[in-house]
Image (cartoon, rainbow, N blue to C red; front, side):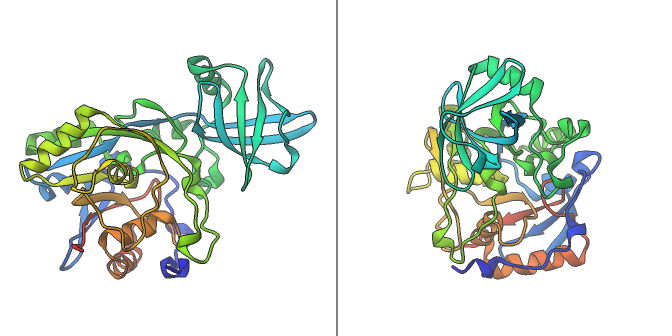
Length: 345
């Protein structure tokens, strides 16, 4: 499809700079498979779901993946986006043209990395001088949270340290938050449990590639960056059991949905998974598992708006987004959300 098909006007002031307080005070637009739209709140979610439905959360935890360093006298900024070894990461570098294989980048006294390879679109592969938990400790000490560039030019502050993590964040490795999960609070989770709604957690370590603009004219020409995903046997069993009992599978966020689609077999059974995925979902995709999707409002021409258009139909999503703009919904990572029902194919 033409990327222009997914374009729409979005005034800059509609992109949220801070999340709602408390988190579950955000607005929610209900987009059913047919019929009208409903302006609700996140706290209405238990009433929109039924006993036996299952929410599938992404429990990845955002790490301080943005590093400022130097190659000699030249300043270099890198944003890690995929771990490929205990000491090796793929990263986007600025300015990448100043780097070549074999160069050393110093981030702090006694903390550095060597450029192992140089790829396309500003990507490099870095071998750090430490590995595993020691590397994580160095990132905590010297790195910064990689806030999306559309929010305060990507400059995170102390408040973002808490705001940009979900309450169930556990597995370290993401460089972007699974933002639909940011709306959940202990009180909301308790209300969902009281309603009889089940939940499962899977892990997709969201990469910085999610921020990259789509620069091609046709969706067939866009290349998604790989992200590491894990579905444990226990999570797969919980989702399959809920579905077998008649419950609906509700993906919390596009990251959860992408991993579910990567791990489901052709019959719609969720299989254990521990691998990389570069799945790119556009209209025409035949969904295997999820019945509903809770997600924030996305940017025009983004792969995420393409995904929600595949899930609920392009024209329906265009209408929903025009309604959201007219009603003053807040967009993007810190904004409001919508609950989408999958359009039958």
